[in-house]
Length: 466
Ligand code: NAD
Ligand code: UGA
Image (cartoon, rainbow, N blue to C red; front, side, top):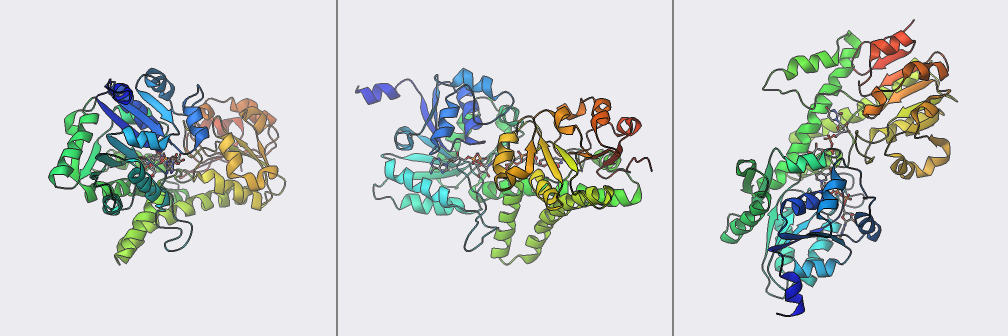
């Protein structure tokens, strides 16, 4: 046995993941934890990110992730920048690179930008010397596997690559929990013998900890499209309730009561009905744009228009929120200290991609407000998002210091921390009249009103002292 064979010997299978981001890192950490006989390597071209994955300070904040990484790292979980070596030794390659919205050329602003995807395919061809299963983990347009299969089949070495789709449904902030106990795992493959064998190998990974009946196997195309459709449906629920929150504010109805009333119908279900300033995150907008683009490319204008409305309502909701702030603060924000409680796109993450807080901040700055941003995890990312206007914004991690001298507090992220603050103390330090705009409906509005605030929730009657 040569030294290379010896090195590979102890592991039953070798899995590689290309892309050590929010999906690749946690997903592979959980696979390594649950499959101790598999060697799991995660590679990335971003050396800084890999350095962080190998350090005590992981590059992303996810509850429970530290423990999982600590248990598996160095045992059967490895992070590396050596993409070539990783490809060479792997039996199964997950591709979890970013697939952002295209910002140039044909389909700009709507289609998926597959440049990272195609580069990865080329790298796989260049460094492979044997058959491999290639797993689409990134969210991709339906039919991407066909293109991937064609590129990979063009290799001159006679190597067979089998492309399988295995989209990821984890949500940030609950990634570890979602990976440990997913509602379902989806695996799509071609109906050929090699396709079925490859799908079985991927089923074999997840079957280490997930009941077999929750592992769904479908055609490649259903699997790819299901991912876009799942995100579109989730986002649609938020836009549906948000569109009605506007009507509630006009009619004195309460959107939370409505959500409870309709959510009690088991056909509707109670989840994802929290009215808000709008959804953010790296995927909902990009995936719906992508779905709309695909529908238009097949000349299905009505299908495209239907889903596009979900995005239009989302924009409407954040503009409506800022409009209300301006109106209630007597139609001028000039020189007023306005504090954002929360900048992350949701609680329990430091991620700010597409966070509604970004557009809210920019709208407030246009009104010449003095904007102060507070967040327990997202201030570094907030600084990057607002780099061009950084000197016009104050960043203050301590919510009490942030609120001192403020005219209005805007709750933009549903961090638990904001429920527990001493609002009596905060009120005393604010300019009067003092306002709270609860963009997440997480605070005790009656109590805040009692303290003396003018309170403006989403989709509920305002509590004022006029
Ligand atoms: P991310 O930007 O956090 O990570 C992608 C990583 O891929 C980056 O670190 C980048 O440097 C690396 N990369 C790009 N090209 C590479 C190459 N050629 N070789 C090696 N590394 C390369 O993205 P993410 O949030 O992890 O999302 C990845 C995919 O998963 C996207 O398609 C996204 O739509 C999908 N997804 C994301 C989530 C989520 O919650 N973030 C959930 C489900 C699905
Ligand atoms: C979402 C999906 O939930 C995941 O299943 C999917 O894998 C992922 O996108 C993806 O493909 O990237 P994520 O964006 O991490 O996950 O977070 P969500 O919990 O879905 O929240 C998205 C946004 O909607 C947040 O801004 C959140 O605050 C908002 N939201 C959520 C509401 O405004 N109201 C709700 O009732 C629920």
